[in-house]
Every structure is written in C-alpha cells, then in structure tokens.
Image 1 (cartoon, one colour):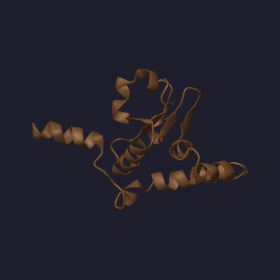
Image 2 (cartoon, helix red, strand yellow; image 1 turned 135 degrees about the vertical axis):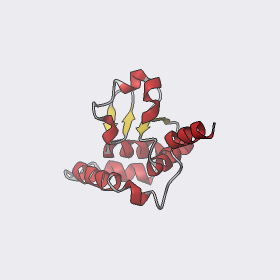
Image 3 (tube, rainbow, N blue to C red; image 1 turned 30 degrees about the vertical axis):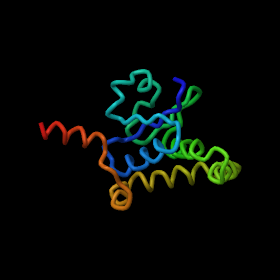
Image 4 (cartoon, helix red, strand yellow; image 1 turned 90 degrees about the vertical axis):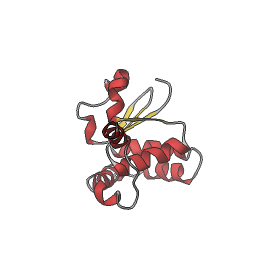
Length: 133
C-alpha cells in the first residue's frame, strides 16, 4: 500500500459527507466498508470489529476511531493551524482520552449530526440503482 486510506461506514450519510470532504481535499484514498471485499489486503490489516469505527491506514500503521479522523485532518492541513493544533494537543496526557471520548459522542449520534451534514451513502445509492432496474 502506498496511498494512505480512510476506511469508513459507507452506509452512513454523515460518514459519507466527511469521507467526500477528505476525498475532495486530500490525496487520501477513500474505501467504504461495503468495498472491503474488493480490497482483501486492506481488510486483513483492520481490527476484527472494524465496523465499530473509521480507520486510517498507512504503510506503517492503522489508526482507528478518533485517531483515524485526527490523522486524516493532519493530512488535510499539512502545514496549517489544524495540524499545529493537533501536534500541540498531543503534548497533553489526557488528549487521547478526550479525543476518543469526542469521537464516540459524535459516532453514537450520527443520526442527529446527519440532519446537519449528510450525503446519500454509496451503499444506499447502489441499492437504489438495483431497485430501479
């Protein structure tokens, strides 16, 4: 694998909105959970219960949950204030705990966040196309 990859729940409108955001602004490859059968090398690097959160996969490492979004944001803003802010926050002992707490709070309320920011998920677009045939 040479291109960093964000693996996400492509049956979630809120998650799709974020994945498209990163896709349009970075060189990060985006792969939905439903596409993992086409990427067995990627799937084998993910944790057993990979569907519990998003993952950011590089040659060296797999970042999961809050760390995955953090790493995607760092790639989005290579030399800017977001990356600098993340690097600064990493100096604090409680940062990782707070980051993961925040990720879980958002992830567990995706239906509410999806009312504000959402796109039709690819997995649902595919199902709709099949029904239209």
